[in-house]
Image 1: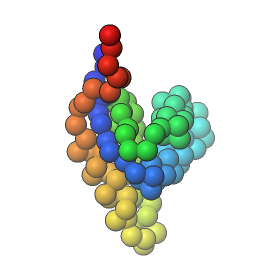
Image 2: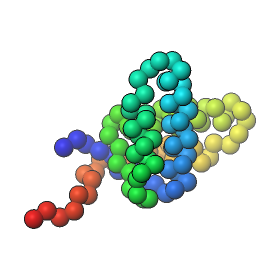
Image 3: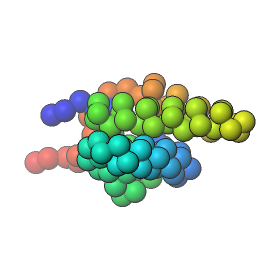
Image 4: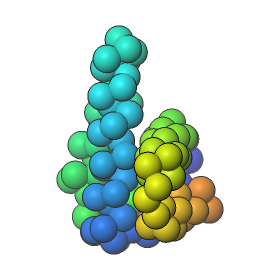
Length: 105
């Protein structure tokens, strides 16, 4: 079983992360880089149940990278980045936890 990081997220945080990942997806596509990880993560976020997000190491690093790029863009344009900062810190501080799969018999 792979190690996964657990992040407790609400709907606003989910949308902010999707927005950041879309920008990374566009950049990767323009540069001709592989977009599989980013695309899969965006789809995972769109389908997730509210409150629980489990990230693999690749997804975790991609999320941090995307949020940091969005934060840099906001700061460059003179906008506040408080919401992005809170999501970024929450993802960076996430701990490893096994996904709940229910009771087996």
